[in-house]
Structure formats: structure tokens, C-alpha cells
Image 1: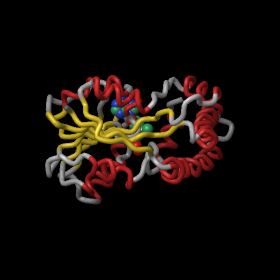
Image 2: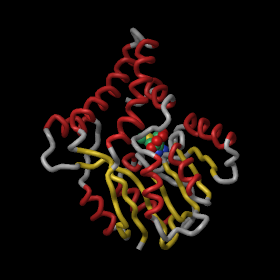
Image 3: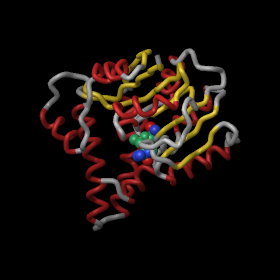
Length: 247
Ligand SMILES: C[S@@+](CC[C@H](N)C(=O)[O-])C[C@H]1O[C@@H](n2cnc3c(N)ncnc32)[C@H](O)[C@@H]1O
């Protein structure tokens, strides 16, 4: 349920998906053949928490792209405050039709956003924008165990997401012409402490603010439901960080 109430919640939290600086840094450092000043596209960057982390650990230039302009306006404020205008540019755009030229980037980064067009499409459509040995780095939600509970499968189906396994993503990567450099699982803290704890606090406030507003309360209920599902079933699914390199 993506509406103004959904955005009010997500605009108020530091990051818009699970993750952490430690894991962003870990994944970046595993891409060990990057040039000194890599040209990076951060796609579906949200308010740019990981964009800023990438700027802090690389000497490159980052294009931070998102569909939702208010997220980018927040990022721009931080860019100005930290004097990073020469290192980060923001762009409102759709990841389904990237407005770039071939071989433009050394790295395409997609934390928590690749699911929007799906890893199949992203792997094939974005490859042409990467340099010969460029990297595609992303997190995606995957099954962590076989035979997950039916309630959980139904939940994700209702959300319109068919979760893959880690092996399915690896197989597709190889088929699409990437080498799988590595992959690792995001920690529980990256979901709870870094993401859902902030959302819980905002939900408390907005539930009061919009008392009696059915559409708003339905939206908050759906966000609460996702958190409840995570708390109950987090052993069965999780976010996997993948570092792929064009072959
Ligand atoms: C789950 S959030 C992840 C944001 C950020 N990478 C993070 O981890 O905090 C997904 C982001 O993708 C953006 N998005 C949704 N559809 C998009 C599209 N078609 N093209 C570009 N960005 C999109 C959303 O606005 C949102 O900021």
C-alpha cells in the first residue's frame, strides 16, 4: 500500500530498507578490482544512507537515483552540509529505464531495491551500463530455509513477491555473464535496530496523528504486519548481499 501515509513513515526514518554501514563497507571492499576513483550508480537510493557510506569509503563519484523526489531532497541537504557536491549527484529516475550510456559505470549498487524490477531483469538490462569488469552489488530478500511455513509463503505471495533462493540468484548471475565474487547474509540488527526500530517509533506517532483515518490506519497496519512477520519468521528469510563482477 504505497500512498502518502506510507511515504510519511519512510521519509521519517534514516534508511528505507534493512542494512548497515558495516555491511555496506564489507560488500564494497569485496569488489577488489575497482579503479581508485570508481564511477558508481546507486539505484533506488532512498534518502541515501548507503550513498553517503559509499562516498566515505571510496574516492569515486556516485549518481544517487530514486523515483521518489522527497528522498533525494533530503539527501541533497546532507550533501550540501557535508560539501559532497563534487562527489554525489542526485537524479530522479526509473530503474526500469535507466537514462545512461553504455559502459558508464564501474559499479551499480542496489541495496534493498533490486526487487522492484527483479534480479532477472536487473542483471540483464543493467549489464550494458557497466564497464567490462564492472560490479553489480545488491541485496535481495531470499529464502534461508527450505519448506518455509505456509503462513509466511502466503504473506509474501500477497505482497506480490516470489522470494528466490540464494542458488537461484547465483545461477541467474552466471547465466547472465557475471562471476559471483561473494555473498553474505545481513545481520538481524540490520533489520531490527537499523530499520524496524526506527519505523516502530514513527508508527507510534502517526497512528495518533491520523486517528480515525481508515486509509492511513490500514497503511500503518500493513507496515506493522511486515514487522510482525519478520519477528516471527526471520529464520526462514533474509536479505542476502551479492557482489557480482561482469565476466
Ligand atoms: C526499500 S527502499 C531502499 C532504499 C535504500 N537503498 C535503502 O536501503 O535505504 C527502495 C527504494 O527504491 C525506490 N524506487 C521504487 N521504485 C523505483 C523505480 N522504479 N526506480 C527507481 N527507484 C525506485 C523507492 O523510492 C525507495 O527509495
